[in-house]
Image 1 (cartoon, helix red, strand yellow):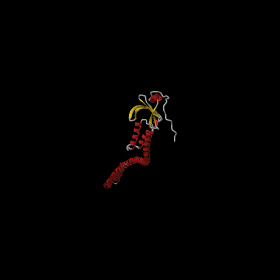
Image 2 (cartoon, rainbow, N blue to C red):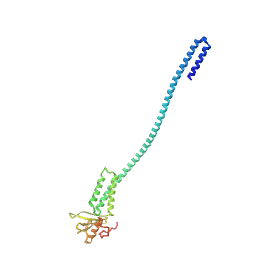
Image 3 (spheres, rainbow, N blue to C red):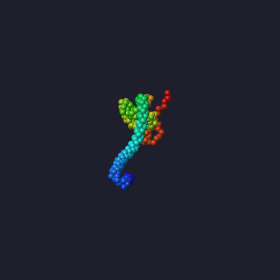
Image 4 (tube, helix red, strand yellow):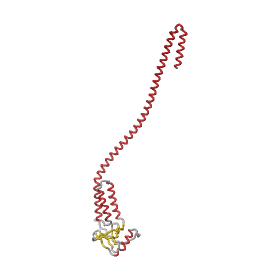
Length: 260
């Protein structure tokens, strides 16, 4: 387009030269001035176009940066919203935990004394019960008493151990057992075979089979039995040790007392 303008101006200039030869010099000056003006305008237009192109490029870069920033903003906003929800949920959970801790403290105030009473009750029960496995049962109770005073053991673990001890004592009531242990009488100790039938009866028989006795829990003493119980108790010991099949045997059993 610039070249067309130049050609047009050149044609006009030539026409003016041919049409007015007398003023040729003056016309040449005018033509030159016109050409200079046109060149200056073209240069100014080129400079303006460069500025426009630079501004356009800058605007394009700014638009690209804006879009990138907006994407980053959306991502950060989504992340911040999620974090805010997590923090809110954690705060609610902390409030719940604080409430549970308060409830646990209140519960502990009642549970800890209760556990102490449970151990004392178990201790008294064992002392009044048929005296089988005295060392094992006394040791279990002493361990529980020591456990109650330990700060490094949780309340739940203490309670579990106490209930476990009660469960063991309950199992004694529905099992039979034979074991060999020492019998202390009149300041003397001797090894005998014990036979326990639940909690109904506890008997012993000397290793030479010459003496058989049954525990009288009311008198808290051993009662020597007659010869008729020697073989039945021998068989009972074998059955308890799974050395003989189950069978009916004649054993001394205390009559049940009427509940008061």
